[in-house]
Length: 329
Image 1: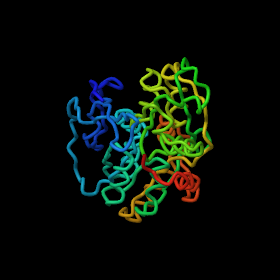
Image 2: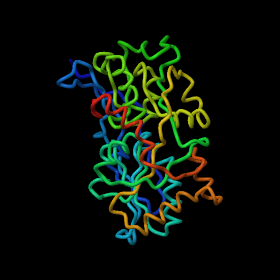
Image 3: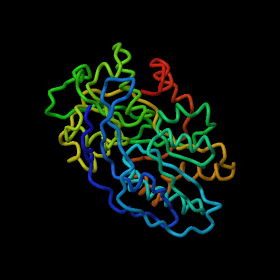
């Protein structure tokens, strides 16, 4: 297949504002998301991935003081890198203020890379996706500190979406069409639609004409809205937040299927975090809804409050993974 000129999936990333004391590893935050077409050697289905090698500049990082005592945190890229940092800046600043120590943000492109940081002891804590947590729990020794309650529920869904002019009305109607996944470890953005295919006796390569990996639910929405792909599976939290704050982003989108409910993405601590910091971070998260500043931060993220979580709540995700036999495409 002749390689085509990369297409830009969305506008270039502008210079990112960051709070003093929060550092961002620029590996992915300054990268412009470009689409490149390729073929898996063992697969006949054309696959699209995001190329993070194209850079638009560098970020100015603030001078750090006392960084040896900093808390190293990652936010899994449920949305694109720019959107992730933009939306979570206030949370990171709130944690830094209330913990009384520096908070450093380590950002990575994929869920697996964040899991690797946790397993290698390079992170103290992270807000990770449910699929990433279910996949990592046994090997990494991570512990749930808190779970976000969204619109009164500590759970969420996958939404299968298409363009409203597509004429596709159900999941089976996507046969022979192109489809966007978000990340190979995403519950809503990969595991759920693949499990749907497995129940039908199909695979992504036999069902879809082409698959894409966008590494952000907001990018998947944009890809469908601009007819870069015919369908996608996205996180209901992202969709519902757009519905409230930027409904124009969804004007061309139609939901054709909703998944069962899953336990919400947890805020976890790594095994390297000492007991004192672990307890304090957990307390700060669980009491955010009790003060005015915390409420404002939570509201900006579409979160009602953080609540206690438990590992068993993610068993339905593990069961789904067992039925398909692998987390990998």
